[in-house]
Image 1 (cartoon, rainbow, N blue to C red):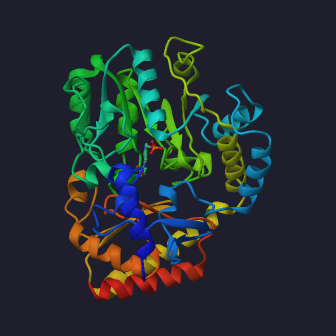
Image 2: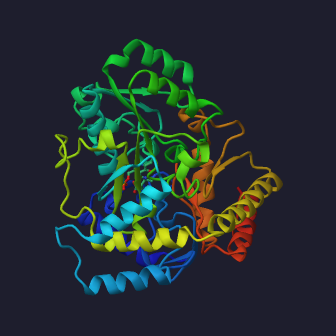
Length: 427
Ligand code: KE4
């Protein structure tokens, strides 16, 4: 497989863009080699500038749940773009998308659209602080909620991948209001809350942690979080930017039956265009400007193109049978990947939640940041570059989730499984 054009483009990008990329995880730093540059994408496939075709399990880190260039989404965007790209004034389609989100996430009684998951998480936290008049927040090790200063403390995703879970440039005064606890450890959580609840505004978590791979909540963990936060007047924020419409149509909150006070969304609800959203109880969200004193704003928030792509995507996802098909496909992939690593004699642990998954290169269970970090990242890196050569595009980090789409066919799954076996057998 040749990557000459990608290498030339990367060299040029390095002169103008930090690390040659506009988001660190794309840089292949954790797996070695240079990133491939993409030319186009269609359905379950992406094509790089050297003409190579890949079955795509990154799917833009989650948004492309219908696969790339879904015909109905493209058609809707084409007609929307004819009417202009941004007005800086309210439109009916913002209310329409808010309505579709509210129907799928009834806990989100009021919703504010923003432009990224980072904006959603930071704004939700500011609102929770305004509501409780408390300053501290609790997050969990390995959870990633975007790159707002106070959240880059033991963060997941690229921050874990590159070993900078505590980013430079974040003043100690910011980080001191962030309490970071081990995920799935309810005793430590309970002790922390009992000792300091008067100062704690909110708890924010990924209910399934997609930013250290795919770490599932232990039975009872989410329920206990809900009970303890309710008791102490602490706002429970589910960051479902990744799990939203991925774990199920109603996200992790529907799947696990937990009603958070606030939710962050992103990715899928923009159908691949820049979007984020935060929302929750009316009494909390009524504090958000201009209704209340918590300020938050955005030039392109509720952008007509992002709203259009999001509406079309949710309309298709809400069609009966869509998630049955996705879960059947996911099941086939899970069985195949587990079988391939067993036959190849490679110790792995596979976890999935709905249509997101992760294969850890480890022989022991993974249930939090520490156990995820025990994975053999060197072996993963060798696996990654070789499976890429087989035309399978996986996330370029052991600490990221993989995703499937409605466009992935059984033929894609069969090819993926046979390629994984071939590569693993040669590791
Ligand atoms: P964005 O600001 O990247 O739109 O969203 C931040 C964010 C917030 N919350 C969760 C649970 C997230 O997963 C993310 C972003 N996810 C990463 C992938 N692990 C985005 C990929 C990247 O950083 O390039």
